[in-house]
Length: 397
Image (tube, rainbow, N blue to C red; front, side):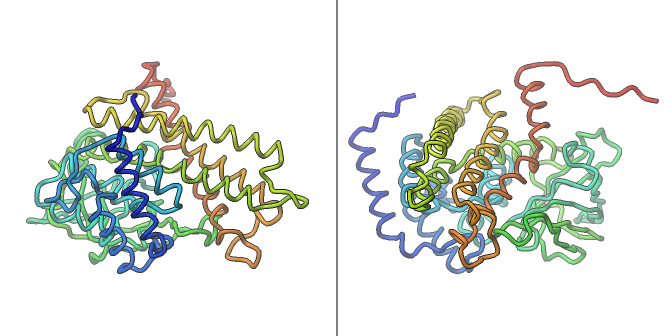
């Protein structure tokens, strides 16, 4: 991997720095909770300059640049140094959009990609069910034909941001007599459709942060057959494309979190001295820095494979396992550095950074479980990556 920057890339870096310096004061804080008008304006501005949706074709609402690994590295570095979010890490941009680019029709791409990348449309993911989490292919939510529509009945659970979403990309069983991994379809569903009931799930994190879990009930929910992505009955293949991008998205911005952690350690004091002066805390930070740099370069490796059209193999399977634990460990150090203030939340008087680290800790802990538990990820790595035999199933009674 050649990471030397020639004059063209240094000129590009200068352009990025100029943009960041000029627009840093106007960026909305917390894109997920920002007013829609502010969110759309900020993301549209980034697309206009090519710092978001950079390689998405112009006809689908992107900037239309050719893929370039070093440009991506430079953009991430400069935005992270400034503490500004590049784009919006949400289920629509990071998971659905690349799936539509691979499997969607031209009409679906034109309708949904641009509006999603600009933050005009917020998405949720309808995958897990009460009896189908790690064994996702056993899902039971069904869609029966009725003329040009499907009628959906069933339940989804742990549906992040379903209470805020405009749309849902959902897996439903359209061929009930097919084998478990067959007969599943991938459908785009408006969340304001009659028959959808969203109920919040309160977790141990309480009201910390902006992320919410919900259970969603579907009672005779009608959706046009035209909203199926790809072919009906082939949703499992498409769903795995989404899951691949979900795992890859979890490799994002460990470097930015590390910069924020180092800043906290310089600001917080222990008996009058900065926490950074503590050899114990500094040693923990250096170990985390090594892991973050490792994941950063691993992400470059993954991006290189993507640009070449190569499969990353086992390299793509370790991302979620490693990065979720890394993010949780960084939050744990931050909370330890804050001492007794680390247990504060709900915007208490002495709370630091409006509870960012408490929310980040809880959310990172949840991600170790969500999207495929760490234990399931280890099975995937061993079976699909290393070719080890599957765990034997218990004998039938």
